[in-house]
Amino acid sequence: MSNAPATFDAHAAGYEGPRRRLIPPFDAFYGTAVDALTMLGRAPRRVLDLGAGTGMLAARVAARYPEAELVLTDGAPAMLEQARAVLGDRAEIVVADLADPLPEGDFDAVVSALAIHHLSDADKRALFARVAAALPPGGVFVNAEQVAGPTPCFDRYYRQWHEAAARAAGSDDAEWAASMERMAHDQCADVEAQLAWLREAGFDAADCLFKDHRFAVLVARRAFEDGARAAS
Image 1 (spheres, rainbow, N blue to C red):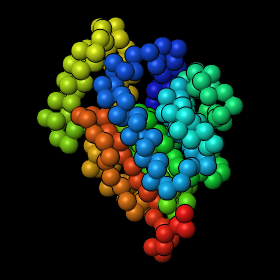
Image 2: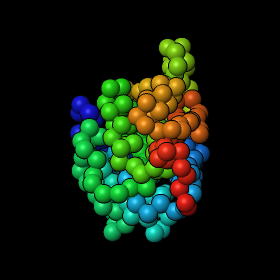
Image 3: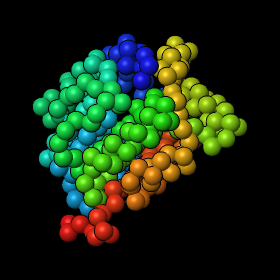
């Protein structure tokens, strides 16, 4: 992911403070991502968080599902240290980039928040295929993501809206400049393209459950074998 891990490591200590200003639909965005795990039809036993950063999504999964085992991966060790301070023994921490092989073991669900858009489109598609292969039939993949507009005019509008909304929430010049430094690593893709890639990867169902301009929650379910539904 180019130099993204080093950039995020440099911002690790102060990363979470501005989140509500820089992610205008913060509560609905993260809330929808956690709610989507109910598509499993039961509480998840083991959840993998890809590009977990400081553990913002993982902490919300842990609060909703106190019995679930969590595995967090990220290529920025300093970010993961922030997650370890929050989650303690609740989570297994693995330093790994999104392009690396997934951790071994059985997962009911794979989640990610604001990480996969740092990959090229080809690497996104390859990751989606690895995630699909790692999940059991009926397993769920939740990607709370920053997305591109479907056309250049919408993409420009999304960017203008994002800055205006962040500044209206109190983001100042220095905070926005730091955000722009991180966003320099973005390689966003639009929603429709990503839904198509998820279906190509082996997910039988994929949809966008939440979208506010450039913030979207994409959810996909791994197909049940031979069309059969899980007993649970």
